[in-house]
Image 1 (cartoon, rainbow over the protein chains, first blue to last red):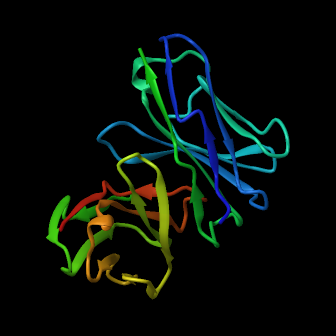
Image 2 (tube, rainbow over the protein chains, first blue to last red):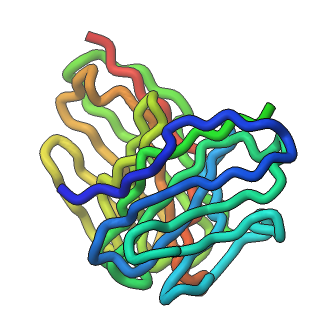
Length: 115
Length: 110
């Protein structure tokens, strides 16, 4: 069964450093998403991406965050200057249709720890 | 603002028991997802519903759009069903994003 692949599975970074989280969505999916889950809290929407541009973003997704699809397969989330409160599990997801009509597929997550 | 509430927060069952998890939400939705999160953290999609009922193996999901309520049932529960089950909804007027409930932690004892 097709999978969404995320790398790395765990990243530890110093506060103030830049991190890039990587995702390979399912190949025929067109809509891509990033969500995060702070330990013990609900999963929260960050951003959705379609046709090489952001289609929607949350209040969390401020100027410190950016997304990119640098080639035909990867989808990345960059955090420019990490803060302690960025420590969370970050999930990439993809869907075939704009309203997830065929469902979402989530990656297994990247656990980011900012120290 | 849409609130997605799940109950119970925690549930312990003996192997073989029938389990029900509830989800309620406050605004009109276009679809509701049931997801499973294992201890390692990964999320697996179980069902997407916009009406009625779906069944997959021992899992059954139902939704009542008028009452803004959905249930996930696990029949003949097994220790491998132990996980966090999460309800997430896509609002009618809110693009593609999902709004998540807080999850129900299920432990099935042998």
